[in-house]
Image (cartoon, rainbow, N blue to C red; front, side):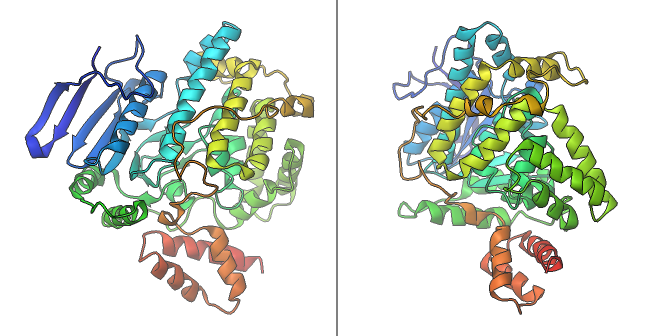
Length: 472
């Protein structure tokens, strides 16, 4: 059946519904049973918008949605009329994750259902890699709940706009899974050890913290998003402009809508951030080592806040699937060497292995279907019972999954658009080391000037400067 699409174009006088002809270019074809309106596509001058439209399901991603989005992205990538893509969600969520309840149901049916689940992850990861290697500006409005599958749709984009409504988390260890959708790439690249902390605990970050910690590149108030979207639709680009030059224009446009930050620092900053970096340091390569460091912080932390945090974090990790915790820690210690393509290929192998592991069905059923509050009956039930051989079995296959893009952006080892976000903590600390006599105001001015006055740079540099200076 031909796809019905709502097309909004101010240039031709508003909304109109058209019947599109069969698309021979579809890389991934729609299938019988795909929902007709789970994604809404619109055209606004040069901007193409994707609206995830399952608000009652918090826009959870499924195969029907992924197939539609892949087809449109491939079409727009070739179109000279499409200048940029915006993705957003209907209702109070951007995208709360994948439809894992359906996957757990398939897995419970045996090997055939487990293969069906693995095939879904292959589809999802192909979409995520397509976004990560997309050759046109891609802008994610992460206004609302952004978890799991929603992270894959947004975190690899050059532009990720958080609002006061944003709630970010990678909750996979709570359901007997592992942080996927490219988390192997972006979590190890977060400042300090925040990525490992978020991965093992599934802790949430909200609002401006998502921006300060680098998950978002910008922070604006949600009421401003419609005006920003309209302004982006008005932008035009000369054909000879490079992708980076187009990104620069979009970046300065978004900055025009940044009107202030609700807090000068993230909740996890100062001494507490130092505790996170110590407890989840790369030298703590096993879950027992992490727990030992946390126990030390609980007993000897420099503040009551740190002691309370450490105690809570120990309890949290012990609630999670032991297999998930052990595999996730190994994943984050290993994946820093993977390029962006290898990331999704390795993750597909790990995901397929988890589909055959009992903890995934146990966790999803307990947390998302029955919604019990007690600890699920994990197998094995303790971290001490998880063997090295079991962990190794998640990483023993060669990555083979084919991807949709094979362009210059397909295999990078660092995000080529990293300059769009706040400066990395490492480069701030390096400047302080190279110029030990530089005053805080001088360091702040350097980074503010380099970013042309980007919102949030002053606040981040000040926090890093103070924290690093306190350790000298």
